[in-house]
Image (cartoon, rainbow, N blue to C red):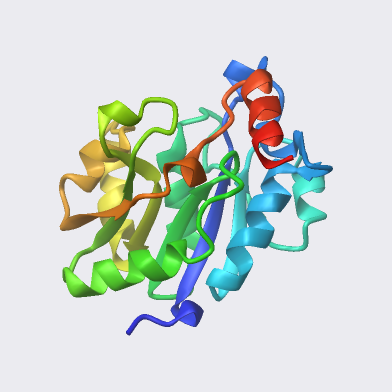
Length: 204
């Protein structure tokens, strides 16, 4: 059984926020607190350690009280850059990744991913859930929600050095199990300020 203490969490807050007009998405207010702080509070009870991957306003993120690490380059290379930073600084056997803009993910997310990874003797366990706005589309992979074995660091370094940026192309190189989560609304994220207000209204 994989214990929570064996897992480090990394919150992915390093994007450009282009669909929000270039604002720092993780610092946008949601129910009176920054999005990323909601994410941190939801993730902390599920893991042993937490860090944040951010590329701007590092002082603001640092005030949350956990380590903050920017991407290794200033290219804004996408979520995999956050995966890489997480693996580089991970001191536990496993790393779980969550985005900063999905503040109501399940409170047992990590435990369910861990059970599936162990049961499937996999290297990666990835969330699969329906789109709350398009339920007829069926379950879809949510690749920014991943539990990874820390031994994958070397593989990811090589993949990114070769120019790879797509999460699904990298995960396809490894034993990956997709874990069904029926609660689609838990994975609704906010890509625009309007979507953030709508997400807030759902919870209000």
